[in-house]
Image (cartoon, rainbow, N blue to C red; front, side, top):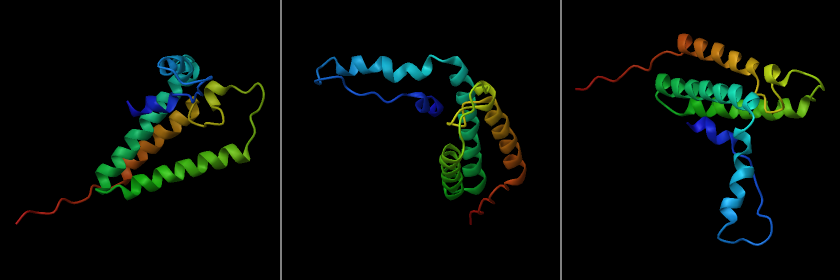
Length: 130
């Protein structure tokens, strides 16, 4: 469910704020939910990323690994956007755009990462009660 929040768009109030301003802002804010080619791979990728963060928390017993993993993703997302340029005519549905998570390639890479983390992250031992 938290993956859906990433698709809300920013919007600005046109003119004075009235009691209808919030309702006027809803259509531009919800515009990210209209394009299925961006919504589907992006939603699935963010859901798998959330599962990976949850698995990291469950296996390590702390938030430090999950926070570091998320911070690393944000760092590389920003670096990717800074160091690359969009190629005209590229298949954005497969490769993604500058957001990097809105293509099917990112989804498959995250699935492989989740499988690897499930295999290599060890379960934290539960302390015995005395």
